Length: 544
Image (cartoon, helix red, strand yellow):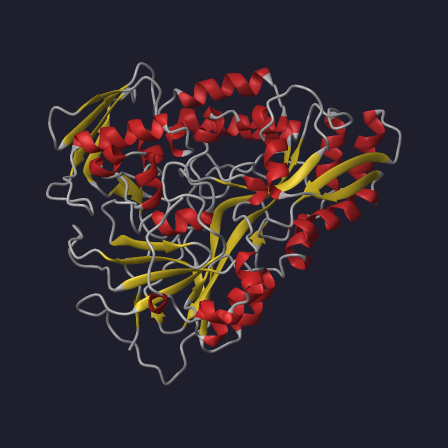
């Protein structure tokens, strides 16, 4: 793959400070290689600027460079096939935009490139009225035909975002400023799902797959300049940005590729970078006491969980799965592994803030005595041997969680062995469609709800695909929820699914994640993203 090169003087000095070994040691950004996704609650900031640093308003024109420590090499610059946060953090909000998006810091949808949108009562037809005068970075006009082309490309590219779009949809683009979408069956999640669908320039689409992966062109507040492997991705302010007022205030964004966590923190402390995302709980606590730093915490649309393979004996015994859930002290995990700051208790298979989220009414909460009773009822000989896996390639406390769970399980008669596996192997095992047993019984990972709703995970059949769970009741409820418009009836269906999942326990939610980020105190206007992962930098500026 070939990318535009920049002269060495264009690269931030931080790269000169990092060893080649550290720069090339890449790590994945999503738990268990899985990133499926939804809304978070507003965040809070900890720490403050030094007392002698006065506040200042945003500049009248773009100025200054914001340097962001990117935790991994981008796998692609095609927004339809990105699979990690390193890609999305560069492309989403900055280069590419959507018809609708979530209002910053909330789980409320609002128009973006659409001026307004509406659906028929049965949700079989959706109408999006488009903004006029919007241009793509390469000068192409933004029209209904360009939206249709982007949707069709996403659907046919085999990437992740195309799965969120309806099957067998008809697009009426006879009016260049109105997109009408009709479907043979109801599609109540259309607005949520198109929020995850980024819109590409028609000229870029015409240039083909290679161009799409190398030189992205959207309508966003920043436009692509260059990518240098193992070094940086550079964006610059879009002088023709359609949204007048409110940014962009920065002249340039530099995403510096620094895979090693310790190196990212060192670069932040030295001032070689301005912003680090996805801190460890320990680093967030340490940086909180630094007057030159601001640490932000906000609830993410992500849950940390233990995926269980329900057709791999003895995990096919529901009593064993329930016992394991009752053996895990989630509060202790949050206190010890997460330093009390990295997550909040939750028993739901859906992340808090996501449409469809409800805590189950009869969850298998921490109760060691009940765990022992369930194991006795299971008919299994104790200690029951099982194995779970984690990956050191994945950012997050996977190993610490797995080891802590092992200790808790052994206290109730489950002999739990922990395996370290490459992230790619975890993903392969997770997505295996074969009906037979898997090489171990479960794995520590995460799920991020990127569309703002739980229904897409039901549509993609996540539970049977990942956990081998084939339950007729959940299947029937899932079909109903996908065809029922938003409202009380749909919320009751989500509640029924929630309680059924809690009873069968194919996945044990450990906690709802708290996103931890830190930036230099002179960085202003940074708002932690509502999905807990991917910020936008249009409103960010550097105080003088």
